[in-house]
Amino acid sequence: MITVPAFFAFTLGIIVYFVGRSINRKFSVLREFNVPESVTGGLLAAGLFYGVYLISGLAIDFELAIRDTLLVYFFTAIGLNARISDLLKGGRPLVLMLVLTLGFIVIQNGVGILGASLLGLAPQVGVLAGSASLIGGHGTAIAWAPEFAAIGIDNALEIGVAAATLGLVLASLIGGPIAKFLIGKHNLKSSSDDSVMGIAYEKERSETIDHLDLMSVMLALHIAITLGYLGFTTLQTYGIKLPLFVTCLMAAIVLSNTVPHVFPKITWPARTQALAVLSDFSLGIFLSMSLMSMQLWTIAELAGPLFFILALQTVAAFLFIIFVLFRLMGKDYQAAVLSAGFGGFALGATPTAIANMTAVTKTHGPAPLAFIILPLISAFFVDITNSVIIKSALNF
Image (cartoon, rainbow, N blue to C red; front, top):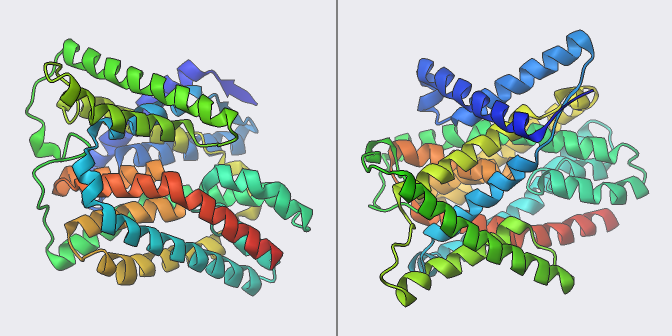
């Protein structure tokens, strides 16, 4: 095995991103379907590393500490851009989206159990290839693997990680086409003149920035991350476990809605081009590194059954988004962007969902509420409920 140190993995992630950007520029179909540059480059790199493994037997492993730091930067940037007024506007849509998400968790496990049964596998494998690895992601799959192993699923860890990996790929590809279909069919347009992500779409890249703008953003981010880390460690002492990016997100929201009012003379970097640049950079390289580091050879033996189950899951997610979520969320542009995000989240992870939504808004215009609703649901509500549902399914 070859282990690539963190610094070189980070550097390669940047290269992979630019490769993806170059490919997207050459093939208009990728742009039309809103496939993020990092997804194009990351999947290509993962395929090349898989080829190296098949030819030479050498497995390439990456140290990903910098990737995880980029995730914290990205979600902290979302917090800095968040306004209380946006959160208040998100009240009813937030509750509705939460109900729909929880309902889909049940559907996802039902589809997984159906697929496993058709293949003659234990129904618990369907739960493992359902919300435990898809909406739950790699972390949930790894955390619950011992529980599945205890009831007789000997390769539970391998199944969970493989399903989460394949789900991440599907999540990266499904969101853009869903948004393109909905926007085109219903002739939808953005009604907002603002964007939580700072850069709404390519036409708005007119503001000039200098090193002081970037330094100001970095300072604000680091203050928020410091407070978020203190909150993270404090909660841990009381037995409350939340991801670090969640506490940093909340700290940034508090700062952005207090500091500009308490100290009006301070130029706060929320919703600026400089913050958007750092946010886009963090998300793009995070996703590039996540996809390029997928060890596809670890899922080769499980590919057949999992492809079948995940094909069913993809169809179920597509139908649910088109015929249920989009309609109930208002059938407007915001709902279309949320649909793209939900496609990324339901099969992959929150960063994938944000990347899908960002790719859509850069082309079609801002959808600020979507960038508030989806991270809040994925960060606070889903993991707890998912755990209850998984436990209930195992007991049943």
